[in-house]
Every structure is written in C-alpha cells, then in structure tokens.
Image 1 (tube, one colour):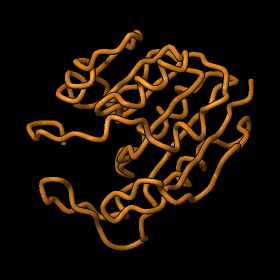
Image 2 (cartoon, rainbow, N blue to C red; image 1 turned 90 degrees about the horizontal axis):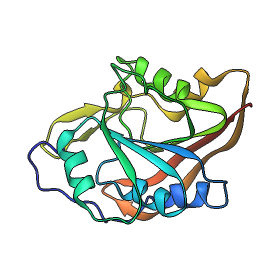
Image 3 (cartoon, rainbow, N blue to C red; image 1 turned 90 degrees about the vertical axis):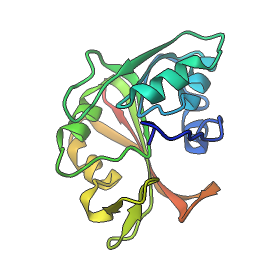
Image 4 (tube, rainbow, N blue to C red; image 1 turned 60 degrees about the vertical axis):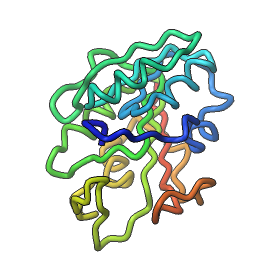
Length: 188
C-alpha cells in the first residue's frame, strides 16, 4: 500500500488500542505493521518505549517524518522472515495481514512477548468466504489469512486471555464494521 500511493490514515491511534491499553503500566512496546505511526506516537505519549516496525520503508519514512516530542525507534522488519531481536511488554498488531502460508509471522508475534507482557491483536471480522480488494484492486481471499483465533491457538499454556471479543468499530472503514480483539498476557 505504501510503495507508491499517496495514502494517509486519520493520524489518530486505533480505538481498540486506546481501549485495551489505557491504564496498563507502560514498558517496552512493539508496534507491528506501524503504517503511518499513529499508534506508535500514541503509545510513546503514554510513556511506552516504542519500537515501530513495518514491511514498507516508505511507510516508515512517512511515519518518522511526523514530528513528535517522544523517541520512537523505526525499523524495517518482515515478521514472515525474521523475528524481532528482543522481547516486549506489549506487542501490538492492528489489521496485520497474517498469511496462513507464512506461519512464522504469527509465531514471531507470540515469541516477541516478554514474560508478564501482553499481545494485542486486532483484525477485521470477515466472512469465511469471499475476498477483499487491495487499494490497487488486487483480490485477496479471506481464507488465505490467519484470524486472531488461529493466533490464540498458538498460545497454549502459560497465557491468560484477557480480551477475546468482537466489537463494533467507532469508525467504520469500507465494509469493515466489526473488529475481533484478542488481548493475552504471557505468564511471568
């Protein structure tokens, strides 16, 4: 999406992030698929030490160009191919396309959570059949992507599920009106 299209989101953090993280003690956070950096900037303003990663250098350059009084580390990272070098108190991924054909992506998300840390995964609630169309018109079958339930199945023992819900989006986007929200805490 960020390769050559002049595309911009709202500049506001995702509502599910604000709802799920407000009140938690700040620590080290990994914002996966950071896009325009809105979530990373919000987390940093709340006292989190943020590393924001994306597969697109264009997205990272745009995000880093936005002035902020808080320090954020911006890194190019493809979780399908490489795990983060460190673990974090919060690993947050909103609308990250996790292909079933690249299972290491979900595995790397889970492994990046430090003991006592949390995983926050938010996805669009999509039908079992059909497809969505990318910004360039490319069709992507829903069945090709892992759901939060697929990621939850990787957690196993040693995790506590704190949130596992479908929630109406405050801001409706295209045909996406409901989010699936998974927040889990790894035992210390």
